[in-house]
Amino acid sequence: MRVTMIGSGYVGLVSGACFADFGHEVICVDVNQQKVDDLKQGRIPIYEPGLDALVASNAAAGRISFTTDLASAVAEADAVFIAVGTPSRRGDGHADLSYVRAAAKEIAQAITRYTVVVTKSTVPVGTGDVVERIIRETRPDAEFSVVSNPEFLREGAAIEDFKRPDRVVIGANEERAKAVMAELYRPLSLNAAPILFTDRRTAELTKYAANAFLATKITFINEIADLCEEVGADVQLVARGIGMDKRIGSKFLNAGPGYGGSCFPKDTLALIRSAQDYGVSLRVVESVVAVNDARKTAMARKVVRACGGSVQGRTVAVLGLTFKPNTDDMRDAPAINIIDALQRAGAKIRAHDPVGMDQAKAVLHNVTYTDSAYDCATGADVLVLVTEWDAYRALDLKRLRQVMKGAVIVDLRNVYREEEVARAGFDYIRVGAMPKL
Ligand code: NAD
Image (cartoon, rainbow, N blue to C red; front, side, top):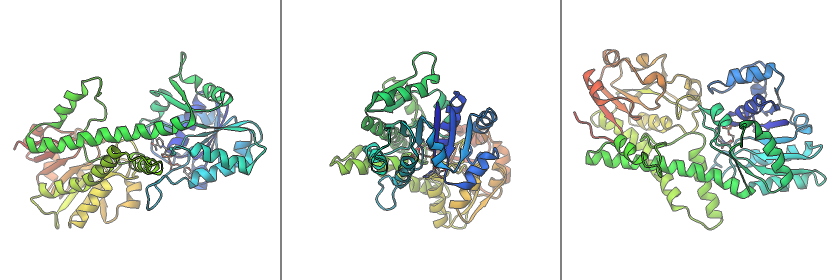
């Protein structure tokens, strides 16, 4: 089938490359000329494990190409996916649909035959109706269907998630469109692909409900971690103890510095706002957002306490800047708020991240960026582990102790064992447990 992706970011590029790998003919479109030029030259503008090889092999086989010319890419397509950004609208937290609207208008002008227009971007309930109206008004003669097919992939494991998803949700109101979507996703599985067909509004809401639920799970265990610290319990064992219950499940129960990233913060907020538009208040999700917001500055206070009550003039070494490992994405990363709060408290920041430093430089200023974890730690009073990259999971603690000025490690991801850190001569503060020493 012929597939066109509008938007070649984390979602559009991964989805496009995976569809191409299944044998479909894919054209990825983007308004960003630099991005398209890079992709044509075989340079991948984002960091996503395995994506460079996947794009290269499919480009060599002639199954994926890149362009800024939306009209020609849409003209012959069976399905056109909208995978543009839907960031928070400044000021009110509603999803900003201006990119989706612009894409819909351009698609409408370019349609030449029956086309399935698929919203892959995360969009509020009713956006499918808006897209349909824009196309209908722009091109009353066009033959098309509008489908919702939200994306559930995770950055860092995006290819695996796309190719072996827990489920694919397709919200389609017409049989003809359903048939096109079923054919597109058929290669996912030799037997029955795990596709859930719904109406369009249900699919749109399913995406937000999933993200809000996951954000709630993280926030719940983070609050339990706070309580563990006060009562002398260990949140890692509490998480195991509850996670072994199949009704709860063990995933998303790692206490940490609060959720961040390009999806959960904006999607929880957008869900709350669109519910309000319908007169419904989602009080659980509202609390989750408030608790998570407060958590980031609470993590900075934890570092300040670990330094004896002040970081004025102290050097803090921060390991890990991206919102999670295996991505270069800095959007709403907890490290941003934590570093900002520490700087306001008078700390000097040294930082390291395996791949995120270029992105970080655009949002974090007055930071000394370093070449390695050990370089980062050199001369520091305290070391703070913010993102649990593999490269930070087995650090040479004795070597760290030698290069650091101070002897405190604050581990916001619970990577280490207190005994081993203590053996290297450190005070060790983690999340969800009282320090024993
Ligand atoms: P992104 O910012 O990485 O990519 C969006 C791309 O769209 C950009 O390259 C931009 O230049 C391009 N674009 C904007 N307007 C365009 C237009 N009119 N024509 C062509 N290109 C245009 O965003 P992303 O992270 O890929 O997210 C896209 C959508 O997918 C969002 O709604 C997001 O919520 C959702 N989503 C993201 C993830 C994720 O992990 N990143 C996961 C699931 C869903």
